[in-house]
Each structure stands twice: as structure tokens, then as C-alpha cells.
Length: 287
Image (cartoon, rainbow, N blue to C red):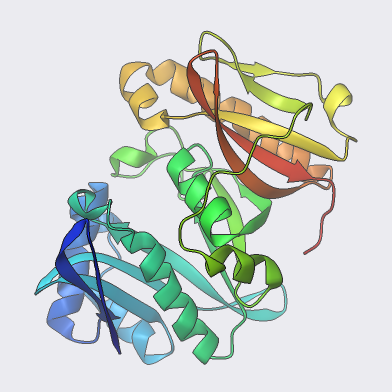
């Protein structure tokens, strides 16, 4: 099955299709290293891709003619007594990231997982990555009630994994009303930032994390956790400050989730000329 995609801003015709042949899976190995800077030990190998596809894994690629420019990969899972699908990797070449391919790859993954009669997909992402946060919560409509400390260890060979590998574990309820509403229109406007929502962590004027007293925040119906808009640039220029942000947000998410909060939304805003990201949490545990 394949989908041909093109638009006014997309000169080539991008084809979304299943990756089925061994040489194509070898290209998936290479793309992992190109996109994330991982060494051979941190790459999901061809043999794993081949074997997992035989037992229900979904591996979908985006092609510009014969060149693989993006892919999504996940496999059947069993979580909390339910059969689910765990999406392990999604990558798009940097030069193709203005073509909305990540979104289209997730739609293709959703279609294939629903065809297996599975109703939810889970995955993890770094909560300090604001673009991924907006994509996951704003465009796809995921929810999160689990935070993993150093999920892949304290570091890997990837340049993205040098201040720890903390992750939010998110759930995409494929046929739920929330998700269907998000997918009705492809282009989403960032939701307005609610006023007077107490925050566990805020971006101070100097760019540092400012923690607030939990007793003044926890127990409210809604709360927020702020992050800097460009953690990768911060990691390059001020690595000690990036580590501060990891520690502060780790504390905030762990406190909030332990107190029964659910991560529901992500907003982007500007305060006194400073771009920030804002997670919004509701005081309810189950979904």
C-alpha cells in the first residue's frame, strides 16, 4: 500500500509505503545514524526489523523517488493487561522536515495498527523537546501519565542524549473522540495559553528554571510546567543550564504525576520577548 503526497511547497512527489525488502531495511539502519548521530551499537538492526515485521511490526517509509527520507517503526505490545502497539522510532531527514512527513507517517501507522484491531499506540519522547511536544499533544492528541527517568540510560551515542534520556510515556487513543477531532483538520493553530494556571516550574527572565512551592500548586484542578523553546541550542551553548532544566522538569513531572495529574496539552507562548513551551496538566489520573 502506498500514498503519493505533494503540495505547492513540496517539489518532489513523496511516496508513503510499507518497507518490505531487506535492502530497504538496510537503508533504515543508515537513516537512524544520519538523523540521530547514533553509532552501530545504538541502531535497531536489520535482523530485528525483519523478524519483528513477521510478527506484526509496522515499518513504513517516506520516499523521494528511490531515496528513503523518513520512516516510522513500531511493534505489537502488551501493556497493563491490554494489547497495544509501541511506536519505537520516527525519523525524517532534516532537509525534508518542512513537508509534514512525520504527521503523514503517523497517520499511515495509525491506519495499519487499526487494521490489526489494536486501538492504542504508545511511545516515548523527551519532554524538553518542544517541537516534539507540540506535535504529539497539539497535532496528534496524545495523553501522558507516566514519566521515565533515564529510560535509555544516562547517555547514548546520539547527540540528543547527552543530558539524560528522561521520557514522557504517551498514549495515542487511535479511535477516541479527542484524537479524531485533532485529525479532522491537518493544520492546527496553537491553543491559547489559559490565564492564572499555577506552575510548578517556570522559565525565569534569565532563562533558568524557577521552581515553585508544590504546596501552593498541587491540589489545584489545573497546573502547568514550562520549558525553554530550544533545549538543543541551550545544550550546545550552556550545557550546565540544560542539565538544570532536566533536573527541574524531572522533579516537576514526577511530583505532578504522583499527585494524580494527567499531561493533556502543550502550548507555545512568548513572555517579554522570550519564547517558551507550556505543558498543561489536569487533576485526573485515568483515561
